[in-house]
Image 1 (cartoon, helix red, strand yellow):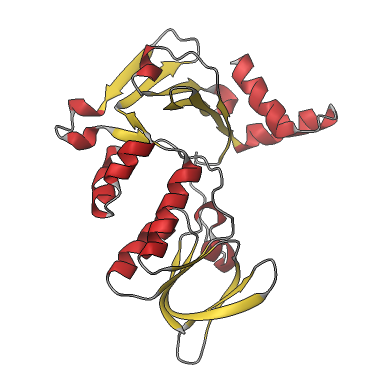
Image 2 (cartoon, rainbow, N blue to C red):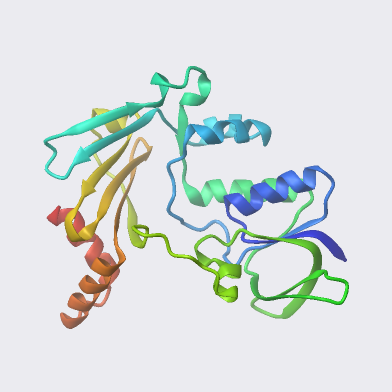
Length: 263
């Protein structure tokens, strides 16, 4: 079969593109290397997405399944200053109220929607190489747990996210100054929410200096809080080496806890 579009990556971008294309009658295949559901960072969405959820006809399901997000609270690391930004002050329709999502559920929901529209969505399929044939069609080589294979398509969409499939292989990946960071996150239960978290505000705590990062707190329900820390990659590398010298077995977990409780 010759597909109209081959998509690398079954996350929100890949699955949404697949759904929209399939709705227009195109034959689409999606290769996703992971098995869904799987955890992922990026749980707090913006009002800009509201119209897309309406177009995909999943808005009511979003309202049923996920918590709502009216804005964000920025806080200094010593909690002496803070600033609250509510979307409703500048967006005067129902889209001001955005969503916090469990990415494991959200991503699976979007990929299943693509399947419902006729997309050939293949999980645990890793694309290994892209080339063209004599007719200028795309050939995508893949492997899974039991086999290797290839498919042909007229067009290719790289929605591989941080993997940067095409830029990495074509050596065209361009670094952006100040964006070289690493993130560590975990979900916590049994947390007593303050007023801002109860209202659904994501909280961002700025941590400067050599860390050049921030801590986020996202209320994902009445008893689930996503807490993560984003840090400068060079700082993470230094701390990883220090923990290795101390023979810490799980350096990521230890670094995460150190940053939360030292801040």
